[in-house]
Length: 423
Image (tube, rainbow, N blue to C red; front, side, top):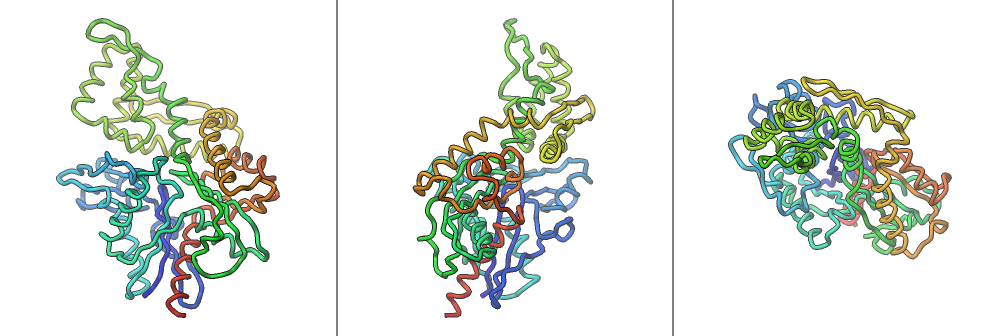
């Protein structure tokens, strides 16, 4: 039996092998990518192959086929959503578990290149899938079923921030009480735990508190779209109803712009007809034409890539410009770091409230925390990092391997099982 740890992330996934010699090593799971140890957690149903491809190949196929196939991203965020049971892709229905199993099968194939032994898998999960406790079990069991569909039958779960804490612990020379903050694409998760004890076992007695909130990088991108770019697609304009009343632009149409993979929902015949009518009655027909172009040209992926680029650029620069010109779409929007920080202030406050709640559960004040280990892509945002510095002091902030530390910690969790089998 060989043991692996899988960080199946909202945006990226990575895999670690718990070797019998006591070492944990990251595995290559997306060879065409610039960083083969990080797999983009997205699927593309290729028109040519009539099947799903994932990761770097998914993006390549999507662009090569002029975005005419079906690209699916952030599927992890739907695990706790009972309304998302299955979706139609061309000529068949796929359950959510079927879609996630595509990613797990890819991982299974990567493991098969390393070993032909039976495999036990430790899978990461957020501290909170969704802020409704009754749905937590549903989400985890759907994830388990997806793993089983891919051929993983020996599966256990570990909280992602705890896994990140175990990875950080490897660098410690003395015991610490640490706050582990894992801020990724879908969730912001926190764990307070004692580290540096170096003992085996479940480590449950070392975990003082854990919690999370469904706000992270994807939420920030959605906020940029809603509050700075939606005006290019009709926000703020009006239209005339059949009765002659002047009404605000339909909010249901604008709501789909929050996530790029939701824009495809507007491709129904009814919505296309609605947009054609709006073009004649809207106070800003150019904006309706831009929204039609976004839908018909399947440009949402590209636009959100530009939003992500601008957001990342603001981590190093004071200003950036979001530019996107395709067909009837012509976006030229200057965004400063101060603007961005103001836009996400309410979401950052929710993250901070969750942080305080976790500290309260642990019975600790910030001075009692020895270190804060930051991981996940959103932890690199200056305003987020400054929030932790203001709470705990800059000297306490630690970080390493933002995208793979959780996988390493999951590998260390799997290594515990290797030791149990050997004893």
